[in-house]
Length: 204
Image 1 (cartoon, rainbow, N blue to C red):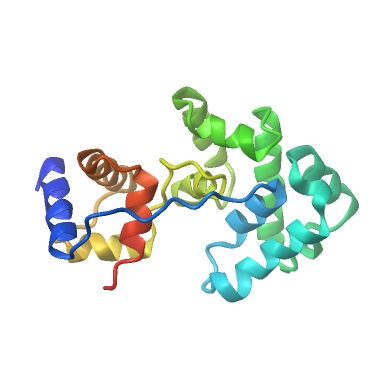
Image 2 (cartoon, rainbow, N blue to C red; image 1 turned 180 degrees about the vertical axis):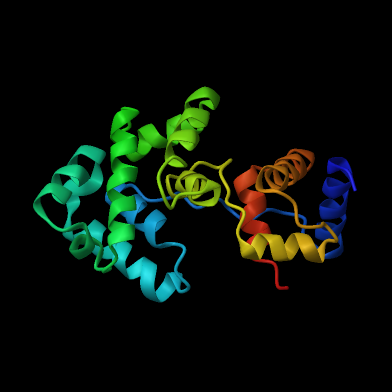
């Protein structure tokens, strides 16, 4: 099955499912600390019970960490594990490295990161640099784009792969799966992030 056939299969699956309009793209967080904690903890099983409360805690408790520089200053004063309310040295290291990568690319605010994701060359550089961090793969790197409200960002997770499997699309490498999503969104005239959100909400 070729890439165009995969796109056709997904389009037909959406049509058969009665999907004619996309889900809205979430605006994302406005607080760098919240973005980082969400990105670091999202691989855990329960977003509602584990991740979301910790993101809200960081946003509400540390308003000064709304910028990259502010978050890095905070981590010099307090243990990252205590800031995140999650006792994992690995996750704490990833949080510090995410913030450092943003700083190295002169990204101090959520708005600057969103603009970066919407600028092809800068996005490519950021995704590459993020994936140099131990424990960060393409899914987490792209998830950062979702968290800052970029409408073209999406992450290929287990649920999206389950939908694609239901559409008759075999398991593909990450980059080829991304292409299926982007090509299908283009055919529909939707933002790729909106298609991702739509697929995620399908009852399968």
